Structure formats: C-alpha cells, structure tokens
Image (cartoon, rainbow, N blue to C red; front, side):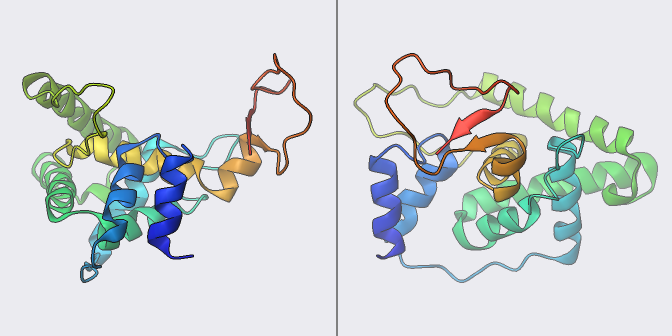
Length: 200
C-alpha cells in the first residue's frame, strides 16, 4: 500500500483526524515530494529543549524520551509547507534573539525558568495574534481547513503533543493498549482504574 492510500484511508476512518497536522499529512500525500529541508545543529538543540519544556519528564517519560524531537525534525524537513516552515523557523529565531538580547546567552543555555518565561511570551503572542486574526469559520459540510498561518507556539505545541501521544513510549507509560478490543460493553469506561486512557 502506498503512503498516499494509507493516509487517505486513515483520515476516512477517523484514525488521525484530531489535528491540522494530520490533515496536512493526508492532503499533501498526493503531491510530489519536495526536497528535504536541512535542520541546523542549533535548530536541533532548540527543538529538543522546547519539546521537553512542553512535556517534561516527571514520573512518566518526557518528550525527549519519546523521540519527539526527531518527529518534529521530520515534519519540518519533509512535510511542512514553505509558509509553515518559515513561521516555525522565525519562531526559533525570535526565541534566540530575545535570549541573547536579555540574558546574553543562547536560548538552549538559559536556565529552565528563563526558557519557560520566553516561551510563555510566545504563547501570549499567539493568543493575541489569533484574537486579531481568527481563522475563517467553516460549516460542518466543508473540508477542514489547514491553517498554515497558525502562530509558532501553536505549531510547536501541536507537533509535541501529536509526536508524544503517537509514540510507543506514551502508549506504554500513559495509556493502556488493547490490541484487539474485546466484547461489546455499551457503558464501558474509557479510563482504567489507574486513570490511564485506553487506546487500540
């Protein structure tokens, strides 16, 4: 089965429709692949730090443990449109510039509190941007829109969450995997006694 066919079937079955990222993957599956973009060593470091800030290691594995940075790099280099890549790259550059101007250090060398503070500013900026320029509303019958102009913070958070919760690490540590769901239970709970979400 070709990648295009798999993605289109998955979308029809509702398996990966939760995010704009998934819709982007499906809609671009029929296009000719573009040349891969190069991820710089600095970008690679920034992505790893940011992913761990969004989902840090606690009593469960963090984003880095789940391989999220590699997932993000792959999406950036092979899947993102030029517009999406530009917005994401500019977001990384903004964090770096602010870190150097305020603290005289690269973003990746700041302590966690300062990194979190700079990232929180990006979240506020994203919220303000969406308030001023909300995405166009659509009817239920319309094809879901892919907002390639979404702010950097929104793109980052989506990539980290999708990358984490589609990883084996998250499936084994935070969810309960049922490879073959059993008998029909009309009022079955979706969460087990330990509070873990069932997936299958």
